[in-house]
Amino acid sequence: MHTPTAHSMFATLAAALAVAFAPVRAAGADLLPGGARLAIIGDSITEQKLYTKFMEAYLLACAGRTDVKVFQFGWSGEKADGFASRLENDLAPFQPTVATTCYGMNDGSYKPFTAEIGQTYESNMRRVAAGLQSAGVQKIVLGSPGAVDTRFFVRTNFAPLSGADGYNKNLASLRDIDKRLAAELGLGFADVHQAMLDAMATAKAALGNEYDVCGKDGFHPGPNGQLIMAYAFLRALGCDGRIADITVDMNGAATASEGHKVAGGNAGSVELVSERYPFCFDGETGSSSGTRSIAPHLPFNEKLNRFTLRVKNLEAPRAMVAWSGESKPFTREQLTAGVNLAAQFDTTPFDGQFKKVVNAIAAKQNFETLMIKNLVTTFRQFSAESKKDPELANAFTNLGKRLMAPQAELDAAVRKAIVPVKHTITVTPLP
Image (cartoon, rainbow, N blue to C red):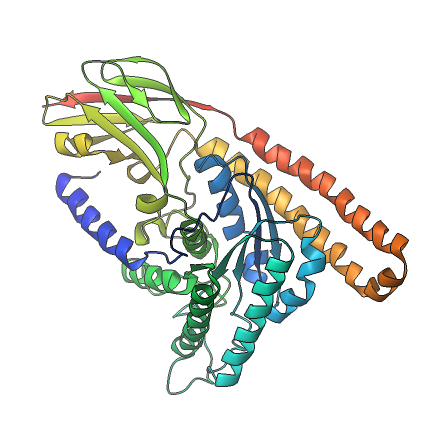
């Protein structure tokens, strides 16, 4: 239960975290225009289909961007040059207009940084950026590599540094290359690396060193670490985090922002029908196998997940807020300023339906991996024959288009799962 003192302490911590996790993106860039087709690209960490799943769920169900189409292109073990070589062929069926990339973990070769590693990575990332633009991608976010876990990434070839400190130093150098390239080329940039380091430090300080943020193997994050990655990319894409603004008037009618309809209620209570969901966390508070445990250690709720309740004309010094079978007290000052229900309540009325949306996205993204890795990418093996035989080339093009039909059906199932949720917020004055 939050007391005013605890709330103010949390607010101070949140403000500090918000500064530490501030994203970097091209100034004034609109990276998700209407009807965007977003390709999420990277190595095995992307192919885990966790941060990609969180991003898609957020864009469609939370941000309300149902005009956006998403396709994930993760490939286990891949380096930037691998994607540069396959991008023209593999992206063709989806025809993306926006792309995010996340390379560097394998490009660093799991050894200390050298000038050669940096030069090779920069050259290959330039090929990636140029190739994406040639393929018709209009907006690009270069994502830095993530980080390795300070407890679980163990190597002996970085002495006198520990394996984790040594490789994170390498990854930071690759991050700096991405940042510089993004500025030079006018692209967006997501600092995934620093976001993971910052969250890992605060999470381990609170939960213990055995709490893994970058995975038990040291570099494949579980859902907790992948939520940090999603945070970095969503912020770089320009998501503003305003999910709902609900006002309850103790003397009159309630109001709600776009995506939410007032269906009834009376003074001190409002019945809502919401088409936009807060991002719903899962798992235990101390487990890396869910997203709930990492939420207090990065400003996800403050920057991306504001489901805000404001109360007008509350005469009592405090009030009890009831939502989704849970009740919590807040001061009049807190309620006047606005309380983020998504951050304050452990359960929400959206939890069950949000899980259905995420599961539908998982089924779609699983098919996308199967489609690209098991079939579409093999078209490249016949490039010489295709150049000589227009009918063969046309057959490959048609097959790619045909494979998009079941993908579209799975995409439709995702959107069908995003249904309006009915819920009630009740404010009861306390002495």
